[in-house]
Image 1 (cartoon, rainbow, N blue to C red):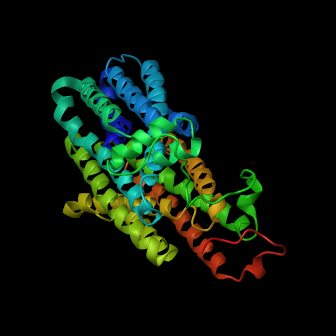
Image 2 (cartoon, rainbow, N blue to C red; image 1 turned 180 degrees about the vertical axis):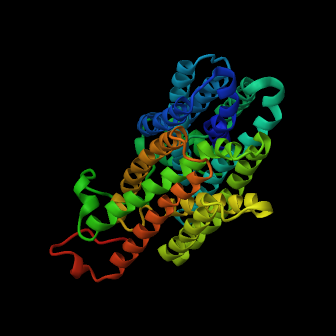
Image 3 (spheres, one colour; image 1 turned 30 degrees about the vertical axis):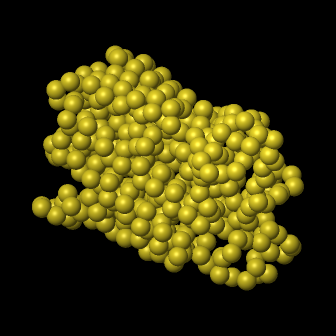
Length: 425
């Protein structure tokens, strides 16, 4: 539930930006900076909050993050200057960025391995639905109560949700056992989850499915053997995928409005694309787990001609908006699917760290995307042409995915003159 508000508060700015621009006389560059500073805050927050969560616990860190971004979202409604918005979006991004990886960790630590990918998919769906809800919420409140009312409502609802999880959310038993910091809380949590369980203070708890890796991750581990080709390609592809998705998510409503589509319709189209992309992303992610990279490449390849057809105004008339919805849906779905493929080529011992490194690199694309949009629109590029420019992102992702597929098909000996970490099955 809290991840829904995470997505809502993060992308609310995409839909309220036109109202902010009109009221505060913001330039296109300033709007782009507001978009990007929030993503930068997510990068820093993702690192800081997960560090804290690994030390004091998932539950208290999630509760604090929820209270923090709820409060900061609400306070954003009182901002009256560009610099105030910039500061608040960065601080809000810190807490928002810290929430999602902690929610992933807490969910998968409650579940068996075979359903953990599905759990992450539903966590991501909650985030995506929340980001899509920002459109209808803005259409409902902004014309009557101004853009400020959207932040008051979103922030207030988030605070209520944070209080609920503070009361009901349990700590991860796996975390408690691993850290062995509070045996009494471990017993209390286990009995809360299963009142019939036979445990008591003084019992010794062990995790039977945790492998042991001697020593920490070395950066060179990500480039051993064939991984020296796979890792850069994965980072490049995911980075451009993130660039495309953040460009779409932040500038989407403004670009549509610049094409003489009404503000309300632009918000609804972007929101509908987000909902469909969330659902399609889960379906494609599950299919990709079964059928592999080529399915992701095929679906991503469809985006390129669609973006070019939109960008060069080949598609017009009644098909224009439905075409944009489908194209935007595929952008979101393929980005979700590639997330599921980030770390499958790495050994278990370094898989989580490999995925984390790829995600961090991807956030660079998330920062660049909004800035690129601001530069294009300020330079006088017609709004519709940004779709054609955006076709570069899925094109590069397709090339990277196909290259990785071909590398993984080749015998290990052809790629490695010396011993290396074997890829995961």
